[in-house]
Image (cartoon, rainbow, N blue to C red):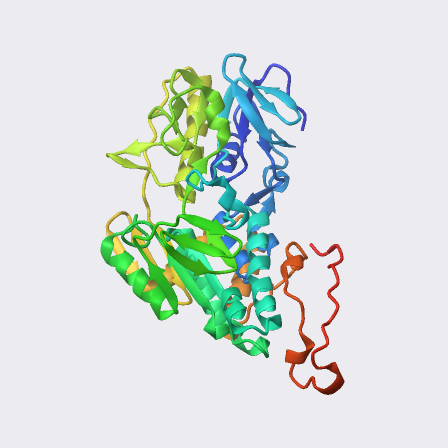
Length: 451
């Protein structure tokens, strides 16, 4: 649908939870909406760790933005926003400048390595489908490498997985990896026992899931340890490389390191020239406006919102509520009515530990754990998924995985295949005689065409 000349132009940057809700709530408003995103799909980020651990496929947790917003007063453009010029009222992207009458910034957050960006190549975070595919490949190739490796010491290094950060992402990754290696895969490998894999979860704060009540945090730690995860709190990482992690003077040899320790707001926030918090988020007005600019709203992980002395959490329900509220305030502006302050209604938050185990808080009062919390977590995530097909696909995949304990989405597409050690024929079962001691020629992997 082409923009109607003369109509109020609303530009929404980001097709995540907040941006999508804002666009949907403006579908009958007398405005033209342009949604900009560097990807063509909406991603259900809370389930990315299940793509990374071979439970779900990327298509199960994503949906085309154009399909979601089709047939409405909305134009969707594939573009990466680089800056915003508040004085000229334009968004600067890789495809040129886009003017706006009202701007909604909903770009979300990226990884924060606390002043050590060089760690990112050794310890990938989990924010996008590419990140999930990268992590899945690193994990599966580590197991393949262990199967090739005749040296017990190096084999242990391949079977050691370190997750840095014990927030929801780190805890969910650690629990899923522990279950995957100890229950789903042991019968699939002949030369290596994946149940002996070592999963370490490192956290600098005194406890895991620090934003949850202390008793739930303690319950989560116990459940992780029952799964075989080694939990180390009060542990500050001082170095990360391709051979392991340093904690002060202590060295942890590990070939697979994953990052779940911190997030930073999109760098676009720095181009606004307005006050930011320590994480680079915009300190918005109660109405979610940029200070001094009623025509610019900031929502989701990019917004620093304090309510009753506490920060509003950077989770999907909060972003969705912000998106709906901004759409209402845009309508108020068009009608000449005053803007309303945003009020976050905390209906609850959950963190899953593993199969049949989770913790949660409902309405900031009711605390649940175990199978009850896990069942509630399943239901809530199915409800929030976009698209009927995705809901059905995820339910079927979960049922299959629960009943069989299998992880069938174990695709290796060649991103890191050149890191595998050489094959030693003399260490293969049944190989003897003239073949013993002969080194097998190593060939460079051919480019992968599997996606």
